[in-house]
Amino acid sequence: MSSSSDTISSISALLSLSDSQYRVFDIGRRVDKISKEQFAKIEAAELAYPYPIQGHALLAIAFWQKQSTSPYLWFIKLPLDERGLLNQGARNHFIAIIIEALGDDLSVNPTEQQEALLKKNPYHFTPAQYKLAAVNSVVSTSLKQVASKFYPPAQHYLSGVNGWEAWQTVGVQGLSDFAFRLDEAQNNQILTNALPYLPEEVLVPLCSALENINLAPAVIKQLTTRYQQEEEKAEVNNTILIALLRALASSTQHPYSQEFIANLIENTDLAEDALIIIAGRLWPTLIDEKLLFSYLEQLIKDNDNALFSAIFKDLVAIPMIRPVLLQAIRSPKRSPELAKAIGMLFKP
Image: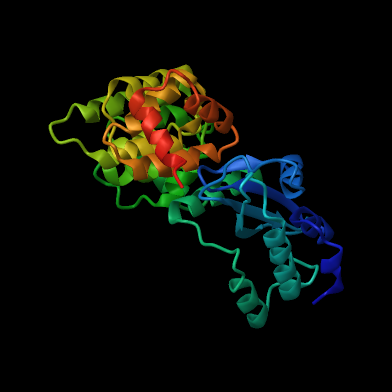
């Protein structure tokens, strides 16, 4: 192994040493950019990982040399410790494997042997198709590259000129490129007009892309209106409802979203998958203690201790929610049922 692994103490240093430009994204919950400064603090264990999922950090790192046109992509899954800090041993092991496979020059095209070494890397993972599409879109937009060839057919379909049944030509990558380019070419208006009519086959993957975008008020309004219309149908399509909820994931700060989600939590009987999506994607709304209480009460309404325990563990790991949640479980405002469910969490 190259001796340089002794001196390279972080992924950031490895990328810098290879003279690479790079961007870091969390892709565990949504696709969220992590700044270089933030990533350096995460790597130095000075900052808890902001978006943990099941005890891990799921990262996409795009890096490229100045003369290169297309970036390389790494998908890395690193364990976190009980405080939510990056496991240093795992990170160092990842660096050692990369250096053993490629040396210091990350831009070399790996040989078959190197490729095999990289594939064996225990920290490498393959994201779901919709997540991969979102990473491709965010990288191409942030590097000001042109959209994929799948973008024009998706944009054309969403404009509605050929009706809503002709969706077979639309791909997940095209919908993702469209979502990441809402500020271009009247796309916000196109989306607002299309949302009431889209069939499930298009709406579901489109919402998976929209969950990464801070949406315009008119789009949020259409998503919530469509949700209410779907709820009133004789046969409710739960897949569509969950997709529409997910679409609000990066727009939870907007008053329209806040009002809509608060109303759902406080005034409707939410199904299990809706409760899971709120914790997994819409968690910023739960920073409000009153809403958090209503949500926890919903979680225990069917006495499902396994669900309560799983979601509690998920939420308490998120640095933004942890203090509010720990305060809430000690609050005298808890109902007897909630107090009992919380007691079960701490039983040996």
